[in-house]
Image (cartoon, rainbow, N blue to C red; front, side, top):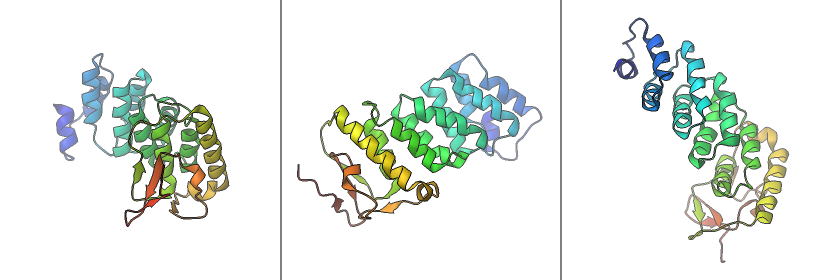
Length: 213
């Protein structure tokens, strides 16, 4: 109840609320830890940075998701390392999405985020989501059009895409680090960087490339 009121009311900061927050973040019950994490106010009190970082040591999807929420609402450079590790190791695709979206605000260079995503292209369970994140992070698109039905890329195709994206990021690293995205149709964006099951949607809702297979 205390943290709920602290979260809702920016003027309510009773003495010792940070100590209570730390105790709840360390509680043996997962539900209590999660409730505390989702009710921390932003900006984050510096005394809570280390306890917040400690919740990701459980390597559980629930606590990792809570950490991403905190990092999104109250980004801090101290969170950069944990977000990079999550990008590199998380098995839940939505954790990869949230870490990708949150990491730059916490000081992770955008090209470093892309580098980590590229290393995961050849993980079958994540390859589709990772490719969508890479494209969304580098191309000005109004949507993605995916072929209906399950499509499984063979290992050799994932290896090809991995090499192609590595070359692309290395060539444009400085531009990508600045947060620039390339327009659809740019000579810097090659069709062979896209998986065969995906097209990019322009503002007029036409697709590029126009798939016929």
